[in-house]
Image (cartoon, rainbow, N blue to C red; front, side):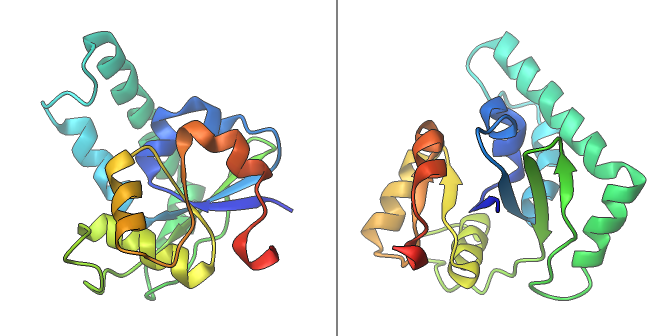
Length: 170
């Protein structure tokens, strides 16, 4: 059985260790975060301080976009877009990693503390009962401060998160 996490598509593109886990993992990715990849790719604003790192990240984002645009993967993603909260069939990345795209809907439930994509991450995590995986320390702090009923892990703690028991099994 694979360990599920809610995360953004850009996290999968940027952090190579997410595509080389020690055990099977499934990333649930809100569709709006895939759209965000196109914005990151075309933006003149750097994502990283070092120009070489920035170019590498944008190359990885381009590779992930190309993978999502392959006919079979595109068809799987389009299936999820017909109904709110529908999930795509799994998109495989090797033997250990699968991505499932979800047509999450921002209901502005957390609008005061969180932007629309963060809200979709929270709602997806709540709805499916699985933890969020992020590199945004500020987001983690706001989740804790708002006492949102979700589990969240920093990407730096990915190995620990893979070993951790899900909340509903503790």
